Length: 449
Image (cartoon, one colour):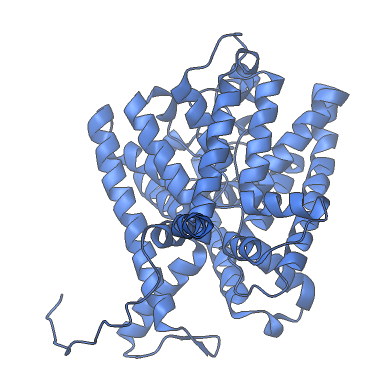
């Protein structure tokens, strides 16, 4: 009998990828139930299950798309639940589970170490407990420093208690790349548009977004080697290079081609902030509906790209985009092997990057077409909305609150996929084990292009 039980347990044993998906799913359900409660809503009534589920998904997947304004719709209790979901979703459920085990001084088993490794996209399992301690400690320090930097603006404006709460909320929301805000009393879904001329608000939030989007493993690499860039890991160099390009390039573009739409005297600051928030966070200091179609297309590309692997950001990841660009560059230069920073990229990594790229582009096109057809809105607005969801960004052209139930569920699904990641999704569905009896068939050429 005991043998049969062990066999059944072994048969239903989840892989690390499946555990990550299941843990996020469970977190979302718990959050949705709590947000449904009457004392989570300002009207004192039960919140509809679909709105609670959408909000919980957006918070746990650190997206920021909302069907209800966070300040005017949710009580302080509801806002606190949203903040907890953002914190757990940003750092990862596996990280919080590891923290609980460390606080209880419980022995960390191999399965938990493997789960943590996949959660933060670490290339090695050795020393994963030390990495976890480092990232939790660093995250807390950064969020506290962010709140301290925001406090001199928010406390004089809102009073001591409310000012401290606003500082903490927006610091965590920015660091976790969530994009939730509490500025709805200045206008529904107004985000940070009233602070377009406030460097004391936009600069701390932008740097919190950047740090959160770099990834936990990147932090440790930088902390270990400091200014010795040559000693940085291969992946760290790619992340830093792509982050720089995807911050500076769009900022220059926005300043040059959207100058009239960058409101306020601090147009350079506004361009920088919009470039920062477009790829991962979803805070907004200008009205996106004023931007031209080409700019919105670039925004969509930035949103789908996302941040670094193992970071608080979602999306396709900057490393994937880098590999795709490297493939194109080397192909047109007639190079057989992709070599970057005097290192070659393995064929398995190339294959994975191509698959993830195709997956995200397919979701973008299919989802945008589907939402456009269901809601009867322009394809531009629908694709922008879907790009924001799968990139877990949270920017919107004002479409989200008007969505029907089926479209809310579709967008929620895209937010979930964008947060858990394309690789996690693929490996949770298919088996990574190769069939030892599968032989290699003769190769044939096929004309393409």
